[in-house]
Image 1 (tube, rainbow, N blue to C red):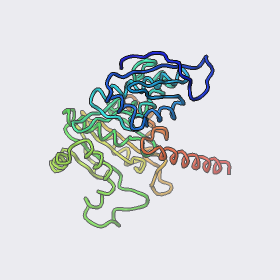
Image 2: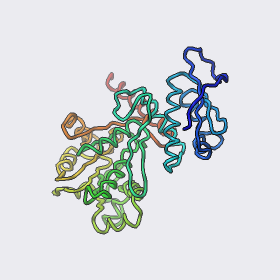
Image 3: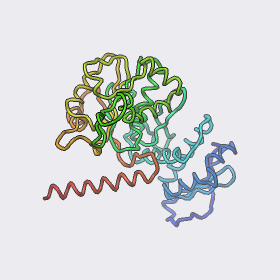
Image 4: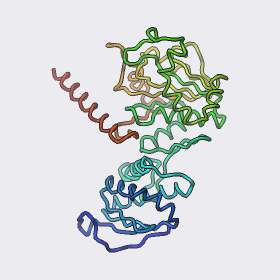
Length: 349
């Protein structure tokens, strides 16, 4: 960025003089500025909607007007995205959404160790040779940093928050760095009342549908031919939870996905497989339990029993961390509020 200068055009939304901040940001590279603002200034319009500011493009400059807090959030967002372009990255709508969330969090969560108030925006990231994933919410940021420091991490919350995807990305990163010798990906083979015995094919064909999301995440992180060779060589192992019994898993990155569908005994069995130089990640959504009625979720129990245990990190995602289509977050909130209301009625009855 080249700098800023005060200007004197009127804001689109009236504000009192005491709470109005008004400045111009100028970017040296015209092409980067154009990419930053987006086609038809769509990224600036998104800034306006999310932060309730005015952001008007003038060549390679943008005039920003609003209250002091939100205009500084806009400044940090644009600074971060412009630097991303300078480093050879791209700026998509999801990048803008993520940067805005993190900029707001810099003011809302001053204790968050990854933020610097009124300073540059920083986000944790996971990198493999094929792809780099940057945190798009404060919880994703905390999750990535927990994966880096803790030997056992629980990532729990609704679908679309990136908890499984980031876990697989972290495992791929550890494998590429030589920090582990293999990746083990597992899921309980229980989904919405289905049972393996009713499915056609051999065991691999039976379990593959349950493990498909893990395959998809792997192929995003590592070239497909290398994934296939690693699976054949046993460097990447994808198996249902039942296959973990009796093993000690050492020198490995181990992920248990959809853990809300484990029983108490299955969860204990899995957690006690942890061996030397191993990292274990457990992901799941306690609101989406498909176990038979009356069977307690091993994930729910583990979160209660292991809270506060040294060496274990628990990161909880919410609907505000959903990074899919914005409508997904609203759908999650609608269901959660309905279920909460039903539980209240049940308790009162």
